[in-house]
Length: 389
Ligand code: PLP
Image (cartoon, rainbow, N blue to C red):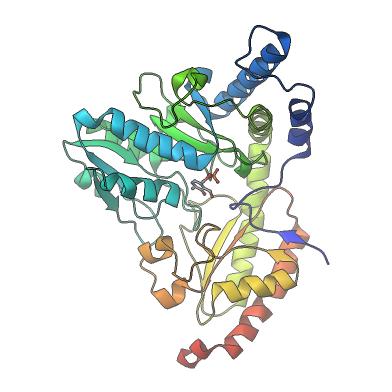
Protein backbone atom coordinates (compact mmCIF):
# COMPACT_ATOMS: atom_id res chain seq x y z
CA UNK A 1 0.00 0.00 0.00
CA UNK A 2 1.18 3.51 -0.82
CA UNK A 3 2.28 5.34 2.33
CA UNK A 4 1.63 9.07 2.52
CA UNK A 5 3.39 10.98 5.27
CA UNK A 6 1.56 14.16 6.23
CA UNK A 7 2.96 14.84 9.70
CA UNK A 8 5.91 17.11 8.94
CA UNK A 9 5.24 19.30 11.97
CA UNK A 10 5.97 16.27 14.16
CA UNK A 11 9.19 15.47 12.31
CA UNK A 12 10.63 15.32 8.79
CA UNK A 13 12.50 12.53 7.00
CA UNK A 14 16.23 13.09 6.83
CA UNK A 15 17.40 14.49 3.48
CA UNK A 16 19.68 12.11 1.55
CA UNK A 17 22.36 14.81 1.13
CA UNK A 18 22.24 15.52 4.86
CA UNK A 19 22.57 11.85 5.68
CA UNK A 20 25.55 11.41 3.36
CA UNK A 21 27.49 14.28 4.83
CA UNK A 22 26.97 12.87 8.35
CA UNK A 23 28.37 9.39 7.58
CA UNK A 24 32.11 10.25 7.82
CA UNK A 25 31.50 11.73 11.30
CA UNK A 26 29.86 8.48 12.41
CA UNK A 27 32.80 6.44 11.08
CA UNK A 28 36.40 7.55 10.36
CA UNK A 29 36.12 11.19 11.46
CA UNK A 30 35.29 10.29 15.04
CA UNK A 31 37.52 12.78 16.86
CA UNK A 32 36.41 14.85 19.82
CA UNK A 33 36.20 18.52 18.77
CA UNK A 34 37.86 19.50 22.07
CA UNK A 35 40.95 17.37 21.25
CA UNK A 36 42.57 20.08 19.21
CA UNK A 37 46.19 18.87 19.52
CA UNK A 38 45.84 16.23 16.81
CA UNK A 39 44.23 16.19 13.40
CA UNK A 40 41.19 13.98 14.15
CA UNK A 41 40.08 16.45 16.81
CA UNK A 42 40.79 19.42 14.57
CA UNK A 43 38.73 17.87 11.76
CA UNK A 44 35.77 17.47 14.10
CA UNK A 45 36.18 21.04 15.40
CA UNK A 46 36.24 22.42 11.84
CA UNK A 47 33.08 20.47 10.99
CA UNK A 48 31.25 21.85 14.04
CA UNK A 49 32.34 25.40 13.21
CA UNK A 50 31.28 25.04 9.57
CA UNK A 51 27.85 23.87 10.73
CA UNK A 52 27.67 26.84 13.11
CA UNK A 53 28.23 29.15 10.13
CA UNK A 54 25.57 27.37 8.07
CA UNK A 55 22.98 27.63 10.85
CA UNK A 56 23.95 31.24 11.62
CA UNK A 57 23.55 32.13 7.95
CA UNK A 58 20.02 30.69 7.87
CA UNK A 59 19.10 32.79 10.92
CA UNK A 60 21.12 35.90 9.94
CA UNK A 61 23.02 35.55 13.21
CA UNK A 62 26.74 35.66 14.00
CA UNK A 63 28.27 32.18 14.30
CA UNK A 64 29.23 32.86 17.93
CA UNK A 65 25.59 33.56 18.73
CA UNK A 66 24.61 29.95 17.90
CA UNK A 67 24.71 27.51 20.85
CA UNK A 68 24.18 23.89 19.81
CA UNK A 69 21.82 21.87 22.01
CA UNK A 70 20.16 18.46 21.96
CA UNK A 71 17.08 19.93 20.25
CA UNK A 72 14.26 22.41 20.57
CA UNK A 73 13.25 21.32 24.06
CA UNK A 74 16.69 21.93 25.50
CA UNK A 75 16.99 25.25 23.66
CA UNK A 76 13.67 26.42 25.16
CA UNK A 77 14.68 25.30 28.66
CA UNK A 78 18.09 26.96 28.33
CA UNK A 79 16.58 30.24 27.14
CA UNK A 80 13.89 30.47 29.80
CA UNK A 81 15.56 29.01 32.88
CA UNK A 82 18.99 30.32 31.87
CA UNK A 83 17.81 33.88 31.32
CA UNK A 84 15.31 34.06 34.19
CA UNK A 85 17.86 32.78 36.72
CA UNK A 86 20.72 34.98 35.53
CA UNK A 87 18.54 38.09 35.62
CA UNK A 88 16.62 37.32 38.78
CA UNK A 89 18.00 40.40 40.53
CA UNK A 90 16.16 42.55 37.95
CA UNK A 91 12.74 40.96 38.47
CA UNK A 92 10.80 37.71 38.73
CA UNK A 93 7.97 38.16 36.23
CA UNK A 94 7.85 36.12 33.01
CA UNK A 95 5.26 36.37 30.25
CA UNK A 96 4.39 33.65 27.78
CA UNK A 97 1.30 32.62 25.81
CA UNK A 98 -1.38 30.07 26.58
CA UNK A 99 -0.66 28.18 23.31
CA UNK A 100 3.06 27.49 23.70
CA UNK A 101 4.56 24.06 23.15
CA UNK A 102 5.05 22.17 26.44
CA UNK A 103 8.80 22.81 26.17
CA UNK A 104 8.05 26.47 26.93
CA UNK A 105 4.73 26.21 28.76
CA UNK A 106 5.88 23.64 31.31
CA UNK A 107 9.27 25.31 31.77
CA UNK A 108 7.52 28.54 32.74
CA UNK A 109 5.22 26.60 35.06
CA UNK A 110 8.29 24.94 36.61
CA UNK A 111 9.79 28.36 37.36
CA UNK A 112 6.56 29.42 39.07
CA UNK A 113 7.40 26.80 41.75
CA UNK A 114 10.65 28.63 42.42
CA UNK A 115 9.46 32.16 43.13
CA UNK A 116 8.73 33.35 39.60
CA UNK A 117 5.41 34.87 38.65
CA UNK A 118 4.20 33.75 35.21
CA UNK A 119 1.51 35.35 33.04
CA UNK A 120 0.01 33.16 30.30
CA UNK A 121 -1.39 35.52 27.68
CA UNK A 122 -4.71 34.64 26.04
CA UNK A 123 -4.95 34.48 22.24
CA UNK A 124 -7.71 35.48 19.84
CA UNK A 125 -9.91 32.95 18.01
CA UNK A 126 -7.21 32.47 15.33
CA UNK A 127 -4.45 31.91 17.86
CA UNK A 128 -2.86 35.35 17.55
CA UNK A 129 -1.19 36.95 20.58
CA UNK A 130 -2.47 40.52 20.31
CA UNK A 131 0.27 43.14 20.83
CA UNK A 132 -2.15 45.14 23.01
CA UNK A 133 -2.60 42.16 25.33
CA UNK A 134 1.16 41.96 25.80
CA UNK A 135 1.41 45.70 26.45
CA UNK A 136 -1.04 45.52 29.35
CA UNK A 137 0.65 42.45 30.87
CA UNK A 138 4.18 43.92 31.02
CA UNK A 139 5.25 45.13 34.48
CA UNK A 140 8.36 46.83 35.87
CA UNK A 141 9.55 43.46 37.21
CA UNK A 142 9.07 41.60 33.87
CA UNK A 143 12.43 40.27 32.72
CA UNK A 144 11.45 37.86 29.97
CA UNK A 145 8.76 37.35 27.34
CA UNK A 146 8.64 34.05 25.43
CA UNK A 147 6.28 33.73 22.47
CA UNK A 148 6.46 31.10 19.74
CA UNK A 149 6.97 32.06 16.09
CA UNK A 150 4.36 29.62 14.80
CA UNK A 151 2.17 27.22 16.67
CA UNK A 152 2.78 23.50 16.14
CA UNK A 153 -0.90 22.52 16.29
CA UNK A 154 -2.71 25.26 14.40
CA UNK A 155 0.12 26.73 12.31
CA UNK A 156 -0.63 30.36 13.20
CA UNK A 157 2.36 32.69 12.72
CA UNK A 158 2.63 35.31 15.48
CA UNK A 159 3.52 39.00 15.02
CA UNK A 160 6.96 38.49 16.61
CA UNK A 161 8.56 41.69 15.36
CA UNK A 162 5.88 43.80 17.01
CA UNK A 163 5.80 41.71 20.20
CA UNK A 164 9.61 41.87 20.56
CA UNK A 165 9.64 45.63 20.08
CA UNK A 166 6.92 46.16 22.74
CA UNK A 167 8.90 43.91 25.09
CA UNK A 168 12.10 45.91 24.57
CA UNK A 169 10.29 49.21 25.19
CA UNK A 170 9.38 47.80 28.59
CA UNK A 171 13.03 46.83 29.24
CA UNK A 172 12.58 43.04 29.11
CA UNK A 173 14.23 40.41 26.89
CA UNK A 174 12.41 38.41 24.20
CA UNK A 175 12.73 34.69 23.47
CA UNK A 176 11.06 33.06 20.49
CA UNK A 177 10.44 29.34 20.01
CA UNK A 178 10.89 29.11 16.24
CA UNK A 179 11.09 25.31 16.08
CA UNK A 180 8.18 25.19 13.62
CA UNK A 181 9.40 27.95 11.33
CA UNK A 182 13.20 27.73 10.98
CA UNK A 183 13.82 26.29 7.52
CA UNK A 184 10.19 26.70 6.44
CA UNK A 185 9.68 30.45 6.34
CA UNK A 186 12.26 33.25 6.62
CA UNK A 187 13.52 33.60 10.20
CA UNK A 188 15.87 36.58 10.49
CA UNK A 189 16.83 37.21 14.09
CA UNK A 190 17.91 40.80 13.35
CA UNK A 191 14.74 41.70 11.50
CA UNK A 192 12.55 40.02 14.13
CA UNK A 193 14.51 41.79 16.88
CA UNK A 194 14.62 38.78 19.20
CA UNK A 195 17.23 38.21 21.93
CA UNK A 196 17.01 34.42 21.93
CA UNK A 197 15.51 31.96 19.45
CA UNK A 198 15.15 28.16 19.51
CA UNK A 199 15.45 25.85 16.49
CA UNK A 200 15.42 22.09 15.97
CA UNK A 201 17.15 20.16 13.19
CA UNK A 202 14.58 17.37 12.76
CA UNK A 203 11.92 19.83 11.59
CA UNK A 204 14.03 20.82 8.56
CA UNK A 205 15.04 17.42 7.16
CA UNK A 206 18.02 17.13 9.51
CA UNK A 207 18.73 14.49 12.17
CA UNK A 208 16.89 14.24 15.49
CA UNK A 209 18.49 15.10 18.82
CA UNK A 210 20.17 18.33 17.75
CA UNK A 211 19.07 21.94 17.68
CA UNK A 212 20.29 25.32 18.76
CA UNK A 213 19.60 28.42 20.76
CA UNK A 214 20.46 31.75 19.18
CA UNK A 215 21.70 34.05 21.94
CA UNK A 216 22.20 37.66 20.88
CA UNK A 217 25.64 39.08 21.74
CA UNK A 218 25.44 40.80 25.12
CA UNK A 219 22.64 38.66 26.57
CA UNK A 220 23.56 37.25 29.98
CA UNK A 221 22.38 33.82 30.91
CA UNK A 222 23.19 30.89 33.15
CA UNK A 223 23.95 27.48 31.76
CA UNK A 224 21.73 24.50 32.55
CA UNK A 225 24.28 21.73 32.14
CA UNK A 226 27.44 21.87 34.22
CA UNK A 227 30.62 20.18 33.12
CA UNK A 228 33.08 20.97 30.33
CA UNK A 229 33.59 24.36 28.74
CA UNK A 230 32.01 23.50 25.37
CA UNK A 231 29.93 26.01 23.39
CA UNK A 232 31.89 28.89 24.94
CA UNK A 233 30.86 27.72 28.43
CA UNK A 234 27.17 27.99 27.56
CA UNK A 235 26.39 24.27 27.16
CA UNK A 236 28.59 21.58 28.66
CA UNK A 237 29.02 18.16 27.07
CA UNK A 238 30.91 16.73 24.09
CA UNK A 239 29.24 17.99 20.94
CA UNK A 240 27.04 15.66 18.88
CA UNK A 241 29.35 16.08 15.88
CA UNK A 242 27.45 13.99 13.26
CA UNK A 243 24.16 15.56 14.36
CA UNK A 244 25.57 19.08 14.23
CA UNK A 245 27.10 18.44 10.79
CA UNK A 246 23.71 17.20 9.57
CA UNK A 247 21.91 20.18 11.09
CA UNK A 248 24.34 22.53 9.32
CA UNK A 249 23.77 20.87 5.94
CA UNK A 250 20.00 20.85 6.49
CA UNK A 251 20.15 24.58 7.26
CA UNK A 252 22.12 25.26 4.07
CA UNK A 253 19.66 23.27 1.94
CA UNK A 254 16.67 24.91 3.60
CA UNK A 255 18.07 28.33 2.80
CA UNK A 256 18.48 27.39 -0.89
CA UNK A 257 15.08 25.74 -1.25
CA UNK A 258 12.82 27.73 1.04
CA UNK A 259 11.19 30.05 -1.51
CA UNK A 260 10.33 27.35 -4.00
CA UNK A 261 9.24 24.71 -1.48
CA UNK A 262 7.27 27.24 0.57
CA UNK A 263 5.32 28.41 -2.47
CA UNK A 264 4.50 24.86 -3.56
CA UNK A 265 3.46 23.74 -0.09
CA UNK A 266 1.30 26.82 0.40
CA UNK A 267 -0.60 25.99 -2.80
CA UNK A 268 -0.93 22.29 -1.98
CA UNK A 269 -2.05 23.06 1.58
CA UNK A 270 -4.62 25.55 0.37
CA UNK A 271 -6.07 23.02 -2.06
CA UNK A 272 -6.20 20.33 0.61
CA UNK A 273 -7.83 22.60 3.19
CA UNK A 274 -10.43 24.04 0.83
CA UNK A 275 -11.22 20.62 -0.64
CA UNK A 276 -11.83 19.10 2.80
CA UNK A 277 -13.86 22.03 4.08
CA UNK A 278 -16.11 21.79 1.02
CA UNK A 279 -16.47 18.01 1.10
CA UNK A 280 -17.05 17.57 4.84
CA UNK A 281 -20.00 19.30 6.52
CA UNK A 282 -19.55 20.59 10.08
CA UNK A 283 -15.83 21.13 9.59
CA UNK A 284 -13.70 24.19 10.30
CA UNK A 285 -10.12 25.29 9.84
CA UNK A 286 -8.26 26.01 13.09
CA UNK A 287 -5.67 28.76 13.27
CA UNK A 288 -5.29 31.89 11.19
CA UNK A 289 -6.71 31.62 7.64
CA UNK A 290 -3.72 33.40 6.04
CA UNK A 291 -0.92 33.90 8.60
CA UNK A 292 0.05 30.24 8.82
CA UNK A 293 2.95 27.89 8.04
CA UNK A 294 2.86 26.81 4.36
CA UNK A 295 1.30 23.35 4.02
CA UNK A 296 -0.10 23.31 7.57
CA UNK A 297 -3.71 22.10 7.44
CA UNK A 298 -5.41 21.84 10.84
CA UNK A 299 -9.11 21.19 11.09
CA UNK A 300 -11.85 20.24 13.53
CA UNK A 301 -14.72 17.96 12.57
CA UNK A 302 -17.81 17.93 14.75
CA UNK A 303 -19.29 14.64 16.07
CA UNK A 304 -16.07 12.59 15.65
CA UNK A 305 -12.93 11.84 17.63
CA UNK A 306 -9.63 12.90 16.03
CA UNK A 307 -7.95 9.68 17.22
CA UNK A 308 -10.52 7.51 15.39
CA UNK A 309 -9.85 9.44 12.18
CA UNK A 310 -6.10 8.83 12.63
CA UNK A 311 -6.57 5.07 13.00
CA UNK A 312 -8.72 4.87 9.88
CA UNK A 313 -6.35 7.08 7.90
CA UNK A 314 -3.49 4.80 8.91
CA UNK A 315 -5.41 1.84 7.44
CA UNK A 316 -5.37 3.60 4.07
CA UNK A 317 -1.70 4.55 4.36
CA UNK A 318 -2.02 8.17 5.48
CA UNK A 319 0.04 9.33 8.48
CA UNK A 320 -1.25 12.43 10.25
CA UNK A 321 -1.81 13.61 13.80
CA UNK A 322 -4.45 14.96 16.09
CA UNK A 323 -3.21 17.98 17.99
CA UNK A 324 0.54 17.72 18.55
CA UNK A 325 2.46 14.45 18.74
CA UNK A 326 3.33 15.28 22.32
CA UNK A 327 -0.30 15.57 23.43
CA UNK A 328 -1.52 12.57 21.44
CA UNK A 329 -2.04 9.65 23.77
CA UNK A 330 -3.83 11.77 26.33
CA UNK A 331 -7.61 12.03 26.18
CA UNK A 332 -7.62 15.65 27.27
CA UNK A 333 -8.23 18.01 24.36
CA UNK A 334 -5.19 20.11 23.58
CA UNK A 335 -4.61 23.29 25.59
CA UNK A 336 -4.07 25.09 22.29
CA UNK A 337 -7.50 24.32 20.86
CA UNK A 338 -9.16 25.16 24.18
CA UNK A 339 -7.28 28.49 24.27
CA UNK A 340 -8.89 29.38 20.92
CA UNK A 341 -12.23 29.18 22.70
CA UNK A 342 -13.33 25.92 21.05
CA UNK A 343 -15.66 23.80 23.19
CA UNK A 344 -14.29 20.42 24.38
CA UNK A 345 -16.46 18.33 22.04
CA UNK A 346 -15.22 20.19 18.96
CA UNK A 347 -11.59 20.24 20.13
CA UNK A 348 -11.78 16.43 20.40
CA UNK A 349 -12.37 16.16 16.66
CA UNK A 350 -9.10 17.75 15.60
CA UNK A 351 -6.88 16.61 12.74
CA UNK A 352 -3.52 18.00 11.63
CA UNK A 353 -2.15 17.29 8.15
CA UNK A 354 1.23 18.91 7.62
CA UNK A 355 2.77 18.72 4.19
CA UNK A 356 6.44 18.51 3.34
CA UNK A 357 8.71 18.56 0.32
CA UNK A 358 8.03 14.90 -0.49
CA UNK A 359 4.27 15.42 -0.87
CA UNK A 360 2.70 15.67 -4.32
CA UNK A 361 -0.59 16.68 -5.94
CA UNK A 362 -1.47 12.96 -6.00
CA UNK A 363 -1.02 12.73 -2.23
CA UNK A 364 -3.43 15.61 -1.76
CA UNK A 365 -5.92 14.00 -4.16
CA UNK A 366 -5.67 10.73 -2.26
CA UNK A 367 -6.50 12.41 1.07
CA UNK A 368 -9.32 14.34 -0.57
CA UNK A 369 -10.73 10.99 -1.74
CA UNK A 370 -10.33 8.95 1.43
CA UNK A 371 -10.97 11.40 4.26
CA UNK A 372 -14.59 12.53 3.61
CA UNK A 373 -15.98 8.94 3.61
CA UNK A 374 -13.95 8.15 6.77
CA UNK A 375 -15.50 11.09 8.63
CA UNK A 376 -18.95 10.13 7.34
CA UNK A 377 -18.56 6.49 8.46
CA UNK A 378 -17.33 7.53 11.91
CA UNK A 379 -20.22 9.95 12.28
CA UNK A 380 -22.70 7.19 11.50
CA UNK A 381 -21.20 5.09 14.30
CA UNK A 382 -20.80 7.95 16.75
CA UNK A 383 -23.09 8.46 19.75
CA UNK A 384 -22.17 12.14 19.48
CA UNK A 385 -24.03 12.11 16.18
CA UNK A 386 -27.36 12.29 18.07
CA UNK A 387 -26.67 15.94 18.58
CA UNK A 388 -26.41 16.52 14.86
CA UNK A 389 -28.70 19.24 13.70
N1 PLP B 1 8.73 23.76 20.25
C1 PLP B 1 7.84 23.50 19.28
C2 PLP B 1 6.95 24.58 18.78
C3 PLP B 1 7.76 22.22 18.73
O1 PLP B 1 6.86 21.96 17.78
C4 PLP B 1 8.61 21.20 19.24
C5 PLP B 1 8.52 19.81 18.73
O2 PLP B 1 7.53 19.40 18.19
C6 PLP B 1 9.55 21.54 20.24
C7 PLP B 1 9.57 22.83 20.72
C8 PLP B 1 10.50 20.51 20.78
O3 PLP B 1 11.55 20.30 19.88
P1 PLP B 1 12.44 18.95 19.97
O4 PLP B 1 11.57 17.86 19.44
O5 PLP B 1 13.60 19.22 19.07
O6 PLP B 1 12.84 18.78 21.38
